[in-house]
Length: 132
Image 1 (tube, rainbow, N blue to C red):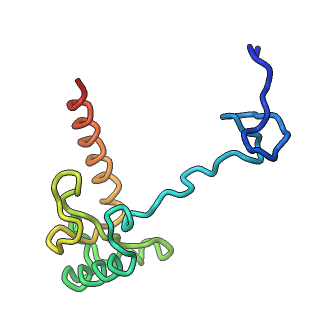
Image 2 (image 1 turned 90 degrees about the vertical axis):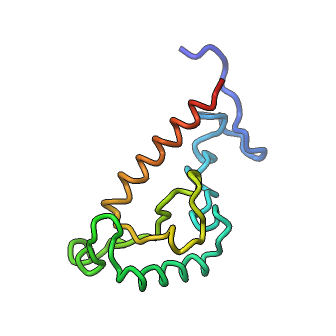
């Protein structure tokens, strides 16, 4: 049972009643809207990011640096997926350089997910230790 009367939508020109988070159903924020991509977070233009990926792919012969599968093998398994992504071997938050070719490698989606999860767990542990 509600304890207070419903309020109007936070949008200044809307007269509908708010249903969730102070807004009506028509004016709910879009999840993840405005979130930037990885390249812009590190101050690298998308063109520079593509160049780094191309140079890394040439150097590593289009293979995942964790499992060694090639782009051809990955495309054979799932033709619609992006086979290899450019990844920081040592995360920037842990002291890795954003544009250093030695810190960049191609990684397949199967290897990237657990690696990112482990990095997030380490970052959360660091953040928890830093709290007084």
